[in-house]
Image (cartoon, rainbow, N blue to C red; front, side):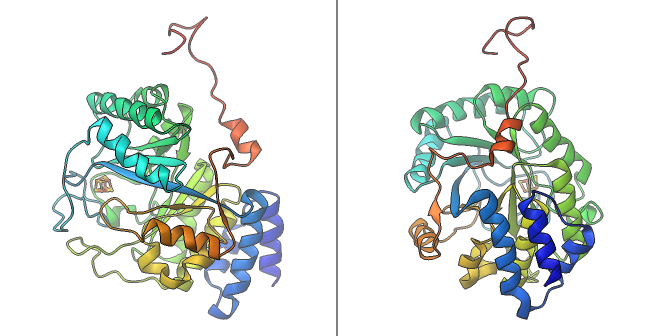
Amino acid sequence: MDLLNALVDKGLRGESPTREEALAVLATSDDELLDVVAAAGKVRRRWFGRRVKLNYLVNLKSGLCPEDCSYCSQRLGSKAEILKYTWLKPEEAAVAAKAGVAGGAKRVCLVASGRGPTDRDVERVSETIAAVKEANEGVEVCACLGFLSDGQAERLRSAGADAYNHNLNTSEATYGDICTTHDFSDRVDTVREAKQSGLSACSGLIAGMGESDADLVDVAFALRDLDPDSVPVNFLIPFEGTPLADEWNLTPQRCLRILAMVRFVCPDAEVRLAAGREVQLRSMQPLALHLANSIFLGDYLTSEGQEGKADLDMIADAGFVVEGTDTTTLPEHRVDELVSVRRRGAGTELPPNA
Ligand code: SF4
């Protein structure tokens, strides 16, 4: 297929497809699906070999959010029967993280529901980052705390955070349909702030909320423009008690096409298979490893994932290997970009370890 040959050539060079080409990937037929997976798999292997990075979520604060994101079980007015609690203590988070690291996770994602952290919350999370890092040598820590205000990204970076997650979720044109309490540009601003502070940006999307192919391509291109290092691809978990409870729009084949499209658009980024893989990809999950080079291990924020052992078996059975802490996930050219420009110590107003 000329389309796929062209996309492989571009992907191997680290280039993205045109918008029309990305749309054409989503429009391929089921008969062409294995060719699509094979083509995007070549791009995946060019940049990440057969490695799979494991990530582990620790939900520091669950539920009770004042925002109204319609896909989210923690939203304002959610009737979903989820756990609700406020701020795990640093030592509790460190213990939770240890379970994931013992299972092979090299990144721990510290997540809190809410619009964004107060300065006191940032202090609290800074203590948690220190506790997690002390108890788990070499682990990467990503924070996901909502919108950041002035200086908070820098404070998290100074506290030892490696990355910050803030998803764009859907296209700018449809953002108002899934949330009324903030808008797309708020999300873009926070990803930019995280990047500017020297944090590795993690930003992705949710598929299955009733969006069109054009919306999916729009959000993928918006992500490409922000150039995050990690791109989580979530498939909607239609939670009872949320407005999207009846939105079962995806098939495993469509999920694979979406992952392939994101891989072509962001060829050298860590594409992470995230929430919803069990319920939406179901028995097709192993094929997704040919497209994504990263997955979450174990449970999600408010729902249970498959057993860690089942994930490890799936990775081995599909011929992939779990990425160790001695391996750098990102291709060399992206790691170089992560080196922070010094803004402290001699010649500045900040002390060396500020
Ligand atoms: S996605 Fe985040 S901001 Fe939106 S309702 Fe859920 S916890 Fe709140």
